[in-house]
Length: 67
Image 1: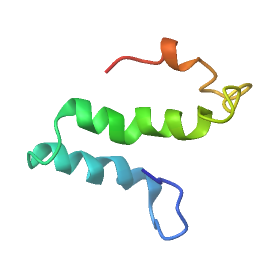
Image 2: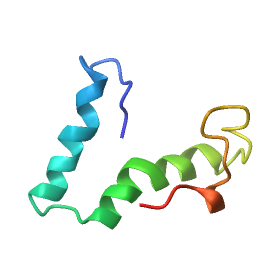
Image 3: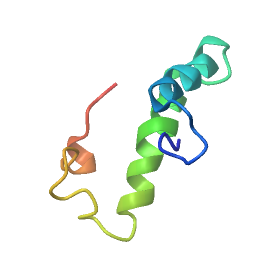
């Protein structure tokens, strides 16, 4: 999920729009978590485990927030 993509006019609406996939039965909550969080963590830490070091989301994936 690319909240800050150049063609997103209002990033505050992206997650709500994405959640509609759950509301319409296209994804379950586990799929939504993977789509919006787990896949992003995998993408950015696959080559660099310290990618998020020093940021507000600095917790390692094994201590990530639970849905």
